[in-house]
Image (cartoon, rainbow, N blue to C red):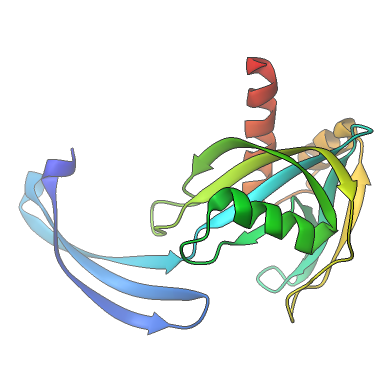
Length: 180
């Protein structure tokens, strides 16, 4: 399948500290034609499913400017260029929640490969304990909250957790549990 596609050229259309937008022209052999596609490049992300010693899950309630509302999600964020995904995910967990725990890799996924080129690394953090205060970025508005696992499942089903990566992280967590 990959042999049917050939990148002809790439042109940057926009760039800021968060993302880069480019147009990529491809030749598609199967119908002998050219097409231009928009691709968004961003840093890779790390997302953590934190579980406390008592078996509670730690989520953050965070204001999101894209949806103009606050929603519950698992802690995570952008990894620095060249940063180890495990270390960066642990850093995000600590900064956003003040919790630390034992990290286990769950999965590596592409958030939306149709037009994005980054990866998202999913981790489970077990035996989490609050060890520090939050260390938020200048425009982060969030608060950590503990929930029972059954509450998190109900929040996914009734639309209180709407972040697709958090829902995918929960699915990876459940898949991990079935493999244990």
